[in-house]
Image (cartoon, rainbow, N blue to C red; front, side, top):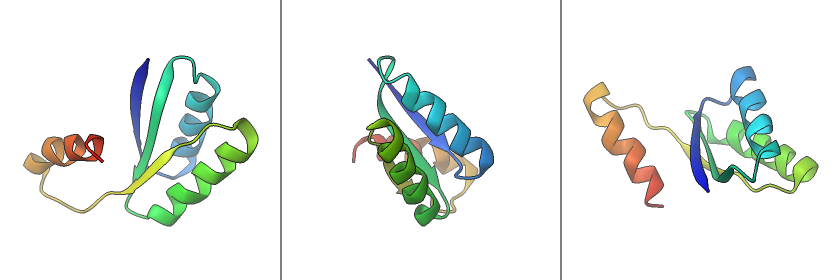
Length: 78
């Protein structure tokens, strides 16, 4: 049904990723993005092991604010 992009791989991002994965009938595509991709990968692997849900991960690049919308939309194209 829906796509969701979670930004941040800290405590809140971890909780959100787990809750979203529990509702995979609502969220059919999940992406977790952060400045540290390895943190995203670790969260995604933990969620996959526990729920069977696959989360796509991406590294957020530091960019100017006016470019964020364009950057986030480009993540969707991958």
